[in-house]
Structure formats: structure tokens, C-alpha cells
Length: 90
Image (tube, rainbow, N blue to C red; front, side):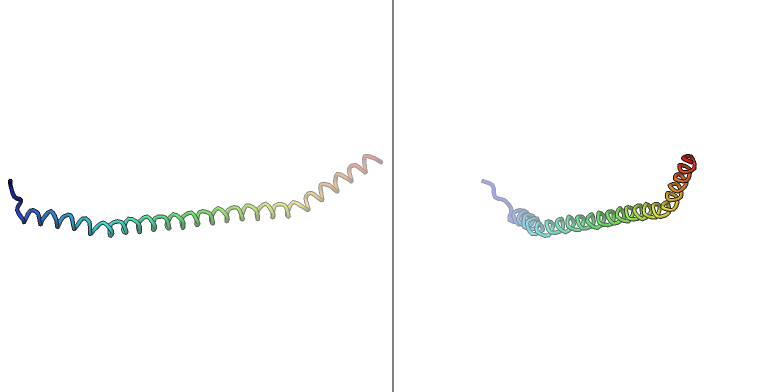
């Protein structure tokens, strides 16, 4: 029967204790990294959604202004068409 040196046993024990002791810290570090990444993605998506909303708002405003400016043109076209119909009828 061979005996193991107490120094080797102590070294292996210390290495195992070190690994076990570091596990909670490593797990928390990984958790914090995942949470910070998720938060960053949330803010990125929020900014993107806000940009898309601004583009949609500008497009709606442009369409509204175009409709406002075209009211007089449509009224003139209708009036001219009525005048032409009236003159052809006489």
C-alpha cells in the first residue's frame, strides 16, 4: 500500500476549494453580463422604435400638408369643369 504525500493531498484540496469558492462569483458575473446586454438591447430597440415613429409622423404630416395645398387646385378644377359643362350645354 502506497501512501500519498500530505503536501499533494493539501494541494489538490486547495485547488478544489478554490474552484468551488470562485463558482458563485463567476455565476454572478455571467448573470450581470447577461442582464446588462439585455438592457442594452432594450434601449437599442426603444431608440429604433422612436425613430420609426418619427418617420411615420413626418410622412403623415407631409400627406396632410399636401392635401391642404391641393384643396384649392381641386376646387378650381371642379369650377372649370362646371363652367365647361355649362358652356357646352348652351
